[in-house]
Image 1 (cartoon, one colour):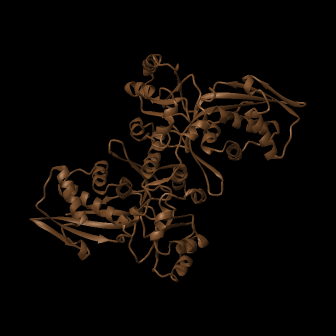
Image 2 (tube, helix red, strand yellow):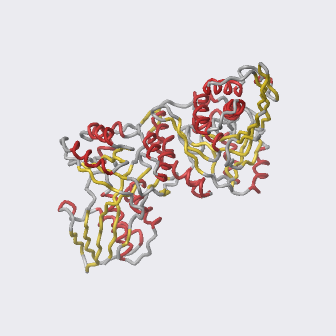
Image 3 (cartoon, chains in turn purple, orange):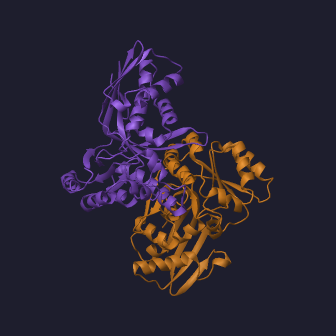
Length: 293
Length: 293
């Protein structure tokens, strides 16, 4: 029996498209139990309770990588991370499955190695890094195809108000709407801001964050496939918004607020919209994935 | 009488085109002395000893901004920063002139204010920020046209081997060779690396730096206008190179070396090339501009 808890994540933070990701205190917990043979799924939605299950596939991939075998496995999930909403539910499954393989075979946990495997499965190091290491991370793939990540501490005072609608977005569609070429000045807009964004998260500098959180690389295209983006943004900016960005590839919109007392006001205004936006107050997760027993 | 010392800078560090700049321990010192009228230049090359002098123009611009006047001024320069070689000689003149105006009018020094004025004169905050604040900085211009910069401490063990040829490059020409549109993946190549580059400079992580210092935004175009770029790069990479990049818009090429004992080997090989490359070992400047008396 092995139990592991993986945090939700918000990727593409501000100007950090395909680069900056942050871990949040919303979790998926996985239990792994050895069986004599076969695979059992407990707690999953029916559409995921089969051999294409991402946790199971990640576990098998990792066993293969480690050169190890198990007879069979029961995988149980307790999931608080909404699915296909840009909060990293897929990454929690990938990371959970990898940890499962390590724990069931008594392989010593090596986060750097797990990060490499997770990137090999998921393909985007910025999506998996914060789920493993916690906090804010900047990630890239080197010329030698090595996944590299560095972590920055995030001040724990930050209030992330996740605004979650009642529709999903497809990451595949969100990638399709983006152009293959962009204006140099739009690239530099993000590139010149990234250093300041990182510093603002380290130091709780809301005023700096407000000045530098813009993006012209993905948000202008992706906001077109997120219903009511403009309406939600306007509501937030009118009431309390130090930074506003699409979480991952959406559909969740993330609003950093200075004052928790403003949540009710935002909630009241959102209730008038069509897509049942649910505001959830989140904090940074500073620990990353934890083995619970 | 006022004396001020301004460090040389290397802009466009690695993946940080128009974003990251670093201050180096090579200096230009300026003396300012009030005259009853007119302007005198001491120590300048003849081509600069006239009313278009950048120090003088920056001083006048600043006096106007401060709403102050002086009767006349003698400006003396002692310059160790080579001119038009991508080591920030123009920025030292701009920053020197601004400090001159502050000091001659007994205006209290405010670096943030000086940075704003320097950006208004120079137009690129990443070029002037490290000359004022020292260390490594990431700079941008906000949507409201405000110049913003953040500073990162650089580990003092770094060895910057500046390779200075006997030809100048024109910043204007270097801007012209760049395309207006770039591939999204080339933009993300830099954007995803910047966080790791900053971390590597803070922690003296040469191995990390080596993995993440690439650039596909300006170097592929600008290397075409820097004679012997490939030859110099090959020599460095063969002997000792943790990072290699065009300093500013060239012509200087910057090579970060792990071991100072390799300088002679690099020097010997460079001596066989045509453009008389002079290697100069530099360290980070951590103080920025200093008022000397």
